[in-house]
Length: 79
Image 1 (cartoon, rainbow, N blue to C red):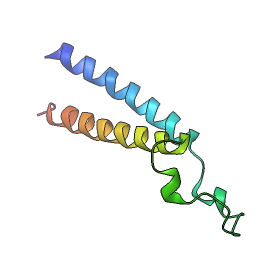
Image 2: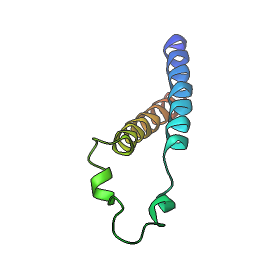
Image 3: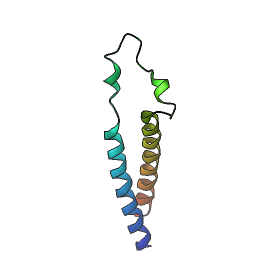
């Protein structure tokens, strides 16, 4: 059981670092506010997954889910 906990802890650390990097790679929500003229790409256009922003968003969501699941598993295994 100690080996499984060690593997899960290492995986948790790797997911945490990856999540941090992916979040820092994303643009801020206020980055497009300078182009109020209407020529800027809309949120829904970016979120379709075909652009870099969409892929980063999906990857962030997956890593966040993995982070939460691993945190719950590691917390439950303490008891």
